Amino acid sequence: MGRGQDWGRGCAVRRAVPAGPLWSCRAVLGEGHQRTVRRVAWSPCGNYLASASFDATTCIWKKQEDGFECITTLEGHENEVKSVAWAPSGTLLATCSRDKSVWVWEVDEEEEYECVSVLNSHTQDVKHVVWHPNQELLASASYDDTVKLYREEEDDWVCCATLEGHQSTVWSVAFDCSGERLASCSDDRTVRVWQRYRPGNQHGVACSGAEPTWKCVCNLSGYHTRTIYDVAWCHLTGALATACGDDAIRVFEEGTGGTEQEPSFSLAAHHLCVWRALVTLHCSASVLSTSVEAEPSLRKRPRVSFSRHMSLMARAVFPVSFLE
Amino acid sequence: MAVTSVSPDMFEEIVMAEERFHGEGYQEGYAEGSHVGVVEGRRYGSLYGAKVGSEIGCYLGFALTWQCLLQKCTDEKNSKKIRALDSLIRMIQKFPYEDPTYDKLQEDLGKIRGKFKQVCSMLNVQSDFRISTESSSLTF
Image 1 (cartoon, rainbow over the protein chains, first blue to last red):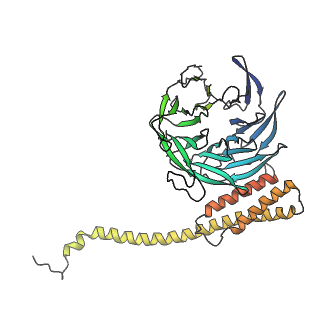
Image 2: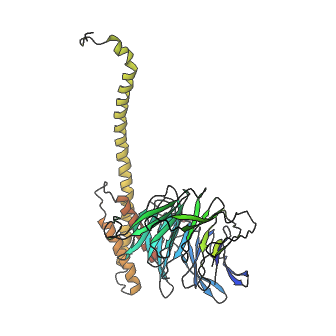
Image 3: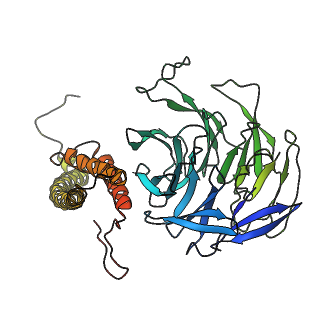
């Protein structure tokens, strides 16, 4: 099991391996980047690590017996790369940057990376990119208040949907396990849940041509008092977790009162922990038999992610994770 | 009381003078401003048009040259590059130069720029044509 961690100002990618209840640092990859490493992502097979940096490059590291080797540096962005994500197929990679563009890269069996598309759809800084769990569909979140979706069409990638509704920067997006829903969180202190409607659906939602429409079916407002920086959707339980600038993590569950078209999410657990600089806090809350562990963050902005069952690969768990 | 429409109220002109001057001044200013705006707009339009023209022209020349250079290469790896170059050339040739009111102008320009960046990445060429850190880069 591997785990990536972002140390903010330090340009290092650390890999820790659990040894009993303790984690030990196995490698320090300090020579790859000249500026802040903003995000790391494991490939689906677990043999490669991608690191996105403010130095406008993305490094691809390959796991060796004694550590990691940088096999490629993806260049092209004009300035800070904000996020990198692997598609579930393992052959596609997406990066996004402050230069307002989203790049899609393809890798072949010979570990050769090639840019297959440069998408200039956003009008401002792109904060985050995320792949659909089982289709080659890409979502991006931007400072221009929108979420955009992209797919491949005849040898090229196109923007197939724009989700408007947020009043300010969208910081992050997350798909649910089915991929029919998307959650987005924003500087406007709300979380929106979007549902996909295919053409000819029985709910009377209009679609243009053969393109599905994404409609906002739920707007969680009034729960957060500051910017929401990250949202994670648990693929096992369907719970939504949010990371907020008001120092709290909130978990939402879908209630039985709503319908598919108008789901109702309610707060299952809030104020799970309070962040205080450089102090380790542990707390547990029973949320569907999971427990939450908190760690101090060297950065002001907390992140959340869900880890899968122990027998599966763990995702990046900086700095909060749900342990099943 | 009978209204005499023949002689205007002699006080009307004096009392309403300020308002009348405001109105006339506004009309004159508006007319002059519109005229100056049209002149400035025309100048700005021709400058911007020239900028876009030189940018697209640069991409076209670049693409045609590389298409020529890679003409003889028929292996799999280069076929992707050739396909991307063909796509860029097609996009540029389809671009409506004669119509500044084309509603998808900025969108198509964005697509052309994106395709150019992708082609540069595939050919391992810097998109700003910077050869070394000291030399200048090409910007539009």
